[in-house]
Length: 369
Image (cartoon, rainbow, N blue to C red; front, side, top):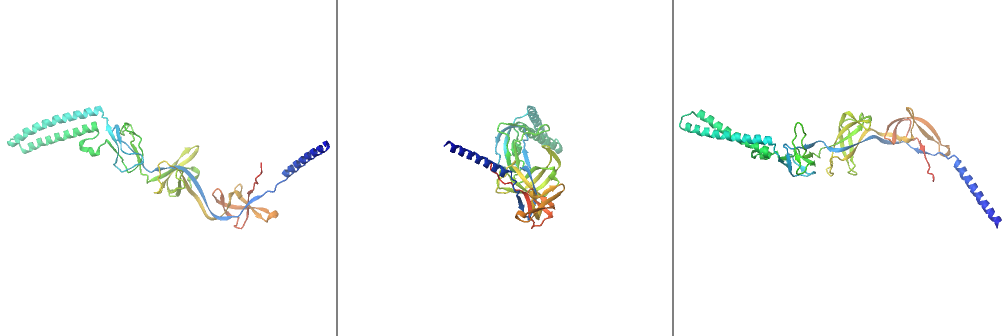
């Protein structure tokens, strides 16, 4: 019994040894190299560059107050459409004390002058009725009375403007009513009721009450690398895709290329702008991130092969043409003249025909771990 057990164990060890030897021998044998094969085909190639940027209105206007004060009411919200001259907000005036004092003093002085002009007029009128003064002197006194009345009205208006921001004579054009200067969509209202606002002057840009823009006139703004800027000209068509709007693209026309480069991440880039044709069925928002495609070069109905089949050697390019079939296959190295490449396929200007078979890269077989 023990003898048979020893024989069985010895047989198992021998089988393991032989199996290992066969496996290693098979692994050491050179494998047949298999190459992919291509047939040249007629196709249209395009070399496209992708430019990242954003969509924004061509003209965005910041509406600012004409007086300093406090916001008492906001009548509009971001996203609403406003017509030119439509009221967006109301401002309560906080008068400057020096200006208020000066305006009140002017009213008091105008009142005194008016009372004196009325006395002079009554005296002159009595004399004129008694034919003791000429009509010319009477007219001059009456004119002085009218001037005094007008000066008082002007002083009162000035006081009301300083104190209230509006006078009875120009209530329709009140500077306390903040009106939109253009027709468009309100993009932002950065102030709230109770905020203090100041008017624009030499030393300050003033407080922005609202940002308004015409969202029917949009542009794409982005940057293109200096290696490609020489291949674009104004008027070139572009295709704009917006990440927030899936499966939607817009046509655009390049209308501006900056004459000066800006450095970005160590590379020189040039700003471009393109007029966007919007679609009525889609709501475009200012600031959307977008990509623009520009066709830099195009070759129609040309003979092409995959670029992976090309061997580059210095300034020359070669392909391997397949001769024969099966075990008798041979590969003939042949010089070709290439043209436009789209990164996948490349144009063959000379050296191949549509009937040739071209060797591609080696086929790597999947191996089990």
